[in-house]
Image (tube, rainbow, N blue to C red; front, side, top):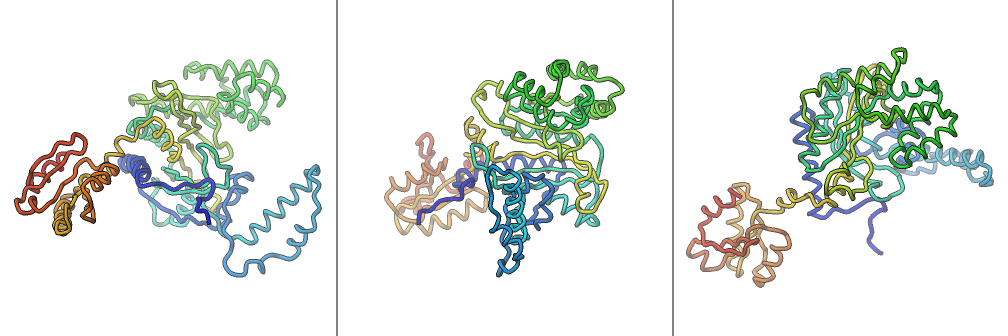
Length: 474
C-alpha cells in the first residue's frame, strides 16, 4: 500500500508546526489583550445544525459522517428505487437536478452528523445553549480546524484552520473599530504588510437603489466584486447583460473610483435611506479610529461584497499589500474577513442577538509568510541547548544535567547514544540548536563543561551555573 494523505490535506513537520504555532501564539496573545476568551467546539456537529446556514452551494460542500450500525436499513426503499430507476439524459437539466436532489436526500438519510464548515455557526449554537451562563456582550476567540469538500488548489484546502474572534450581544460599533485595530496590530506583529478594507451592506444596497436596480442588488455586487480581476470593461459588460444602462454604468464607475470618504458621502442623495444608514455607521467607526495610527493601509472600498447572505452591516476583508516593496510577487486571495450579523442566533431560537466578528486565514497567512521568508522568529524556538555525551558512562550525567537546565525553563535535549562526535554534531546542526554542551570524562571530573556556540564554532569551558546564566541571557 502506497502511503499518502487525503487530497486537500497536509502533514506538518515539527518545523512547520512551530511556524504555525508562531502565528497562533501571536494571535492568541493579542486576542487576550483585547479580552477575547478562548473557546472550543466539537469537530462534529449535528447535520441539521450545519445545513441551510451557508446556502445551497455550502450544503454541498459539507463533509457528512456515515451513521453508525446497519445504516442501509435506515434508507427508505422508495427513495433508493427512485434513485436507481431514474434514467438521466445529461441534456435534460431538470432531470439532472432531480437526481442530484435525490442523491443529496439519501446522503442526509444516512448521515446525521457532519464536520464543521466554519467556526461561526457552532459558536452561535454554543451561545444559545449557554445563554444563562455567559454574560453579554460575550467575546470569544477560537482557533480550530474546519472542513470543506472543495476542489483543492493553491491556497485552498479541504482541511484548514480558522482563527476567529466574535462579539455577540451588542450593537455598538465600537467593536467594529476594535476589530480593525486587531487586524492592523496582528499583521504588524507578524511583519506582513496588508490592506484592510471596510464596506457596509447598506451602502451596497444604496448603490443599487441609486441606479433604480434594487431587484438586481445581488448580481450587481457579485460583478462589482470582480473589479480587481476583470477590470471595468469586464464589469461593465456583465452589468450591461444584467440590464444596466450606459448611464448606470458610468455612475457606478465614477462612484467606485472615488477614494476620498468625504467625497463618497456626497455621491448619495439624502433620500437614499439604505445608503445613509451605511454612511452613518461607517462614519461612526471612523470616528472611533480617528486618533488611532494604522501600521497598514486601511480604506473604505465600495466594491467589497463578501458574504451578503450572511452579513447585515459592516463587512471587512484583508489582503496582502502587493504595493509594498518585497511583496509584489505574492499571489493570494483574502487572508482575513468578517462582518456584522444581526440575528445569527435566531436560527437556533434566540432572536435579536447581534454579533460581529472577523477571521484570520491561518493557512494562507502561513503560505505567504513562508514565501516572503518571514519565519525567522518562529525558527529560533527549536531548542536552546543539546547535550552530547562522548561515551556511555556520560549519558547518565547528561540526563541529570538536562533536568538542571529544564528546571530553569531552558529547552534542553540529550543525545541518547555515545555515537561518533561528527554524527552527534550533524544531528545538533540539522535541528538548529544554537548551543551544544560536550560531555566527556574530563568534563565530569573537573566540573567545567565544554559549551560550543554552533553559529561561530567558539568553545568555552564553564560551570553548569555559568552556562545557565549565559543561556538565560540568550
